[in-house]
Length: 132
Image: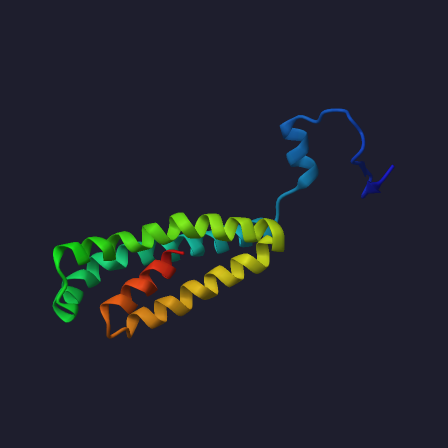
């Protein structure tokens, strides 16, 4: 049988939840993981709520109609709906770490481009990919 650090993975005996946690352990890695996940969550929340602060100025700059405001507000959410399927499938095939890094890179680049966008369509596209 295959064995790693004294544990037999082919053993069919059940282990209760508490014993599984004791065997797994808890340490610095888990605190680091919690911190990184918290920062990613904060980035996502800021990306969504930033439009409420930018929208009054963007209305004047882009001469937006009420419909344009609706599309702009909905574009990050639409990006999340489509992007979650895309990144999820990619993560299953390529690995979670590389996909997480790539998705955060796309988010950061689109956030930077949207901060200097001069056209409404470009701004909305960047906000879509910011949610993607």
